Image (cartoon, rainbow, N blue to C red):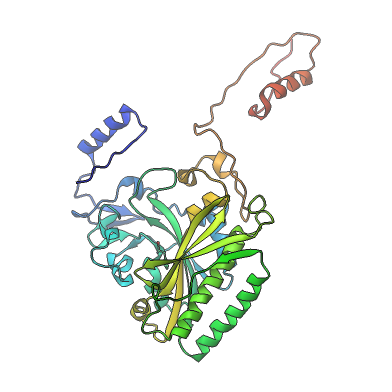
Length: 391
Ligand code: PHE
């Protein structure tokens, strides 16, 4: 048996509150209310009110929130892709897992890893849960941004709610499709050749990262190459030539073979940033069963999924993932739509206003002398100085 040791820096009061909650927690028969809809509970229900409170916040849809700024930057990079938002997070385990080929015993399915509303419905753990329905609508170039939910540890880089963007591009698996991929690969290769980027690559397909039997290996290779070129170009938009970051130096991008149940070949992308390799996204050539399930025969597609928080923390220098949920104006007022700026830390305690009064001598000290004295001593901490009366 394994033992988990939880360290919390919390007071005795917190533990008392926990005990009280255990006595007075929501009766098991009360339905779960999510986005105005009621769902019956059962023995599988493990969603908590702290999580329910987060559903519908849609941080990534706020254009002047770091997550919204990053979401817009990625959407505008993929200019001719249909960028979807606002899709509710309630999905079936079939959408989240089965349709994507997750095995029946995959640990992600367990109630210790995912949030279940009841045995039939859960909160999506990734945006890939919507692949089948979006492909089924006939979308060929699309992005989908959404909140995703995973039960996880508590620290500065994990939070049970975070945001992902899924992107996919479908080609016809005939001569027209092949010509379209080739043309796009040519265009993207030229763009990358003119850019300051060094790419450490792995083969597009290999025995350890094979194409699918149903695919023409030449086309599968072209599509995997298109995926890589498209994402290298995104990495340039996100990380290339950012003031203070890799200044003048080439951007370094590294491709690694990976495994996902719903893609093959599969890859992960890492970027070298401020002295470290950072994992940015997962991607691959979509398993044909996903496209079959969506009812779009004669097609081949690539897909990628990336976490917005991880990238936003790097680009905006935000040290703690919990800050994204802050409603403190000292956080929110720092960011402007369309701009990547460096976060300026502030006290984690709320502002505390203090009025201080001074009696000044009748002569020898001008109001402005006093103001300079204040400025010198307290700098920008002082909001204003008001003369309240004169004898
Ligand atoms: N859904 C995967 C994840 O959350 C990422 C991914 C998306 C990988 C699309 C491949 C293709 O880790």
